[in-house]
Every structure is written in C-alpha cells, then in structure tokens.
Image (tube, rainbow, N blue to C red):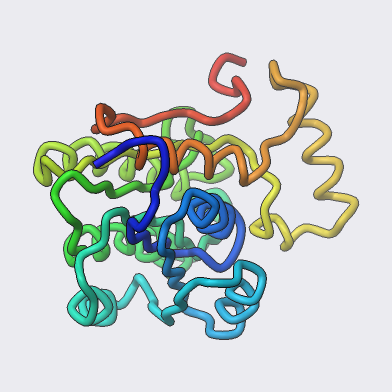
Length: 238
C-alpha cells in the first residue's frame, strides 16, 4: 500500500466529527478515499457528514470495547484507521477528582487501546494515533493529559512491532485551534493563542489541517512506521 493518492482505499476516523479528525476525513476524501467517521454523538456526526458530503457515519463510543468490536465485526477490513477521539478534563492532578483523571485515561488512552485491539486492517495498511506535545514536554497544569500523551507515543511504537506489516504511527500536535478550546470564552481563547503564537518559531497557532496532512502522509508513505512526529510549529525547541 502507499502511493500518491488514496483512491478507493477505505479509511475510518474515530473522533471524525470535529477538529483534527474532521480535517483528516476531509483531506482523505480529496485523496479519493472511501471515508467513515465515527463518534459517540449522533448530532455532531450528522452535522459533520453534512459538511463532508459522501461519507458513512457510525455512532461509536471508544470507551466501550464491545461497541468498538461490533463496529469492526460488521465491516470489511479497512486500509487505514485513525484515532483522534478524546473526552478530556485538564488540570493539575490534585485539583481534579480521581474520577475526572480516570475519565481522561479511559477516553484517550483506553479508547485507542480498544480500537487497536479490535481493528481489522489490511496488511500494509495503517493505524494512526494522535497524542500531543505534553507527552514529551509535560506540564504540571495538565498532569494526566501529559501522562496519557506519553503513553500513546509508546503504544504506537510498540504496536508498530506487534502489528507489522500494518504500519503504526503517532502524530503529536502542538497547540491547535480546534473546538476543544470552546470551554474558554472568546477573549481568553484569543489571548491564549496570541501568547502561544508569540513563542513559536513559525509565529502562529496551529490549524487542524496541518495535523491532518501528517496523518494522511502516514497513509501514503509506506516506509514510515513506529514514528512519533511532532507537528507543533517548533514548540519542542522553545
């Protein structure tokens, strides 16, 4: 597998109803892929499907291993599987409740494990995880998210050995302008992005399309596996 386009290849994006997942689904469509987006909220899926056009939608909660298994059992193997789903609460560990901390791990880490365990992927296909810069540059203001992202980086590398010849990689984004930040009011969000942009070598905040480009590159380049690629505007340098 690999090549210049994804013509006729089957792609599923978990977390495909918004942000990085939605941008990945859109880019895969432009490459000729047959795309399924999966998420736990029907309304968001339908809205995303209306934006994208010719896609399949599937209501799947990645924290439910049985539901994930049924999703794959009911379908032919995919060429490419992408996991960008996450339901996170961010903060210092001792400020969060243990239930909140556990929910972050259940969603982003165990959700990825559930998909990896059940996924039916053609030989030579890909499994791509989405972690984040905190996996390599931890923050005490986001302790569990730092731990989860580091775990995902390691999971992708171990799975690359276990699942070969399926190729497994992880993209590690920096701060990206997605609906995940909607918990902030508009002024706080704008100020945060401006502060971040001022520290980055590229001088701007990330866009989900930039992350999607790397995810699709993993699909197209059949000589990449076991890689954790930082797409962070140079944040790891500062």
